[in-house]
Image 1 (cartoon, rainbow, N blue to C red):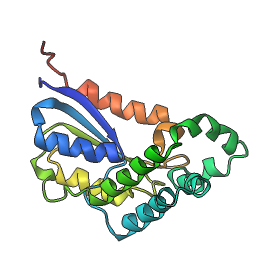
Image 2: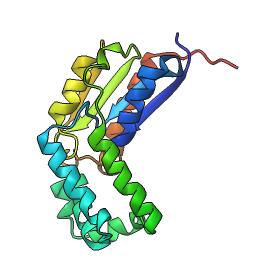
Image 3: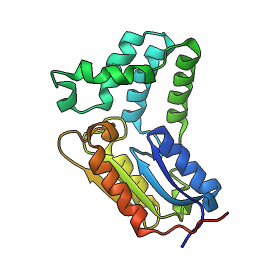
Image 4: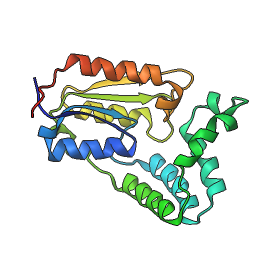
Length: 190
């Protein structure tokens, strides 16, 4: 049994979780790194720079169009895609401050680099990525899993296996996460 809490991080959250597991391992009983990477490669740097730019120029129409890269071709081509996107619109930056924070988040994505330290993570770790993920390519997630001792790698394939698995394939994602939780008992401390 381990202490700490069960943690999951998606995209930038996975980068933050890597840092937490490295700096405070006692706080992380299990880690799910979903849509993760250790250091940007040239492809990812290009994609993130392109996604960052509309927020710098405050061009929300382009920012929303560019956000489509997080979804699968199947979802983007669905006749009801725009209607399906409507409930998510409030989650997109609306104010100047929110747009500036988004720029800073993109900068944090670009600066993230744990590649040479991942071997120090001793937490039971599951790395999940979709084969259609264009933001955090499967080879990047595989490299993270390979660098963390004992980490398990799961690649979801087929339609909907995008950066937004939690939107397109939530049952598959939850099933994988639940599997890790069932494998590792956590000692509760008060």
